[in-house]
Amino acid sequence: MKNTANNSKENSNGQNSAMHILIIEDDLEAAGWLKKGLKESGHVVDHASDGETGLALALSEPFDVLIIDRMLPKMDGLTIVKKAREEGVKTPVLILSALGEVDEKVDGLRAGADDYLPKPYAFSELLARVEGLVRRKDTEPQQTVLKAQDLEIDLLTRKAKRGDQEILLQPREFKLLEYLMRNADQVVTRTMLLENVWNYHFDPQTNVIDVHISRLRGKIDKDFDTPILETVRGAGYMIRAHKP
Image (cartoon, rainbow, N blue to C red):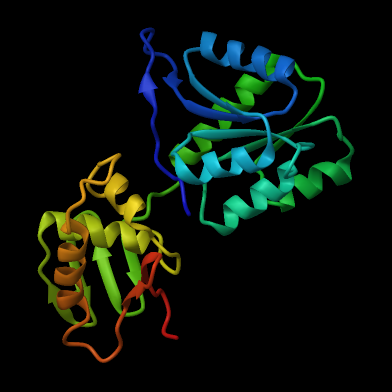
């Protein structure tokens, strides 16, 4: 799964933007020092002390920056980055490591990290690098059209079409389709849909998802030869980006 949202908010001084930052660091003293400095700089900070927990957080919540130590229990930092990128996470990543040789830095960047800072480091340099990563991300052009096979949705006009045929969608149907297409070729669970499309953080024990999936399937698949919206039995739903 995939985490690209920007949670930035203006600080009271109006000069910087508050960021939601995830630190994945097993050295609790170092993590505490870093967390304290980032919070004092106006940012919201979460912390994971092992690689598996860190990856799970990185895949499940939207962060503005990931700060990842290279040597971690359960899963090393480079593996976290690789797996996150494979899942479509585009959040900027800063790797921290005591391994500061050129080859080590190259390995980190090739794994998918955006920057690499050797230990020991000055907090002011780390903060400047983090802010630089976010500025770079904010200047990248935003994707406004999502495509899967011959299905296309325009995020600006809120219109959908398959081939040359326009598909009329209700606002909730569009939001559902957008979420599925942003996660194309990945199984989307009922819990993910409830949290991200309906903003429920609990299961209301209704058939609301089934009803909307059925309506959506009737609009994007019924009159076409190749089904694009699949039900993955016992798991959830999936939009196929490419024909099987």
